[in-house]
Length: 492
Image 1 (cartoon, helix red, strand yellow):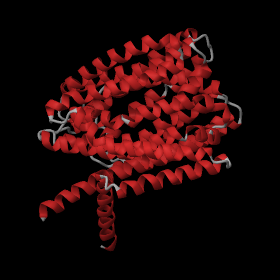
Image 2: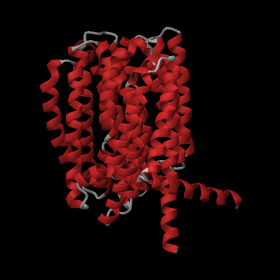
Image 3: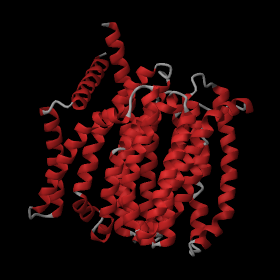
Image 4: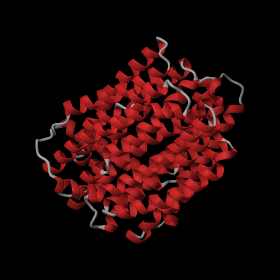
């Protein structure tokens, strides 16, 4: 009985952190969703194309900001004050160097795309790199100590402030600078809030030896993340150069909605899963149990969201973004399918990191990127849509590659993983087909969308209950336990 109670406490503790992280991501994304809706109606697609090009470079620099140290601090069992302070001071200097490089390279980027306005945009937007140097160790500390409530308040205030600044500048006619302000203000306020709410402060201590040990684990994650970021953004660089800014805007707008949903669920799970798994890194059976649960539960949540969005894409785009954005619908549907399988990637890779196998992590990234770059260059000249469709093939290949080591590490291979997620996916597809049929009933688009959302949720939940899907019953039991525990706490 005591063991069961202890396990239940662990479950509700992990769930509590997940719910705080999920609430943080949902709060941020709901606000950003409304802001994106308003800005998309005010700004031209070309402005989005410009910011998409610049974001590629800031995201690449962002990889170097962390340098793998964040994950190394979370994964290391006995990380102490000297480890955290050493990483902090190194990051400050490193981020200033990175910003100096991008500042002087900005004119070269502008010349490459034949757009002189990019110089100023690059120099201002890439200030996020300097700010991130102040934030990322605080972020690692919060994740390691499982204080995800801190993320909630910091993100909420930062998102609201960025919304006000972005919309205000857009209404005043500042165009792309409204989007720049939105990104920069969000990170600045978020960082300030974390510094006010998190107790950790760097001390004036530094150790190259500690930094070297952390880097021995982290450099493989750095290279892996760099490959991933370069690969994910290379399509945007190519589209911006070979095709038009409007093509790039439609491509990016297509990824916006599914990515926003996935980041809510996936980032929440990712943040909680790595530190939780790291504590059980010496017990492969326990890591397998957590990996399996993460894959089954997150796919069960993700699949209906992605399929619902894919089947209702035309209605959603027309109602929310207006008909001028309808060319982004095919891209949106493609990304919905690829993002639906992200839980497999996240859980498998977190298991590998938690068990200290950053060497395998790097090998997997190299193999995936060889396949990905080959497919990308094979489809480059056949149009933006064909490039997007190629993601369906690489998504399947990446699932198999990411799961391959875990067949040996913890006896949990891809076929078993596929068997675990198929019930939720099949039910989600059926639900998507049902809500798609509602489009053929003559009625105002806004009413169609509301009915599709309500019907989709009702169909998925009702059939889950009738079919007694294991993931549905698991989530129901955990939520009941969580509510019961909160009720007891409030009575005390």
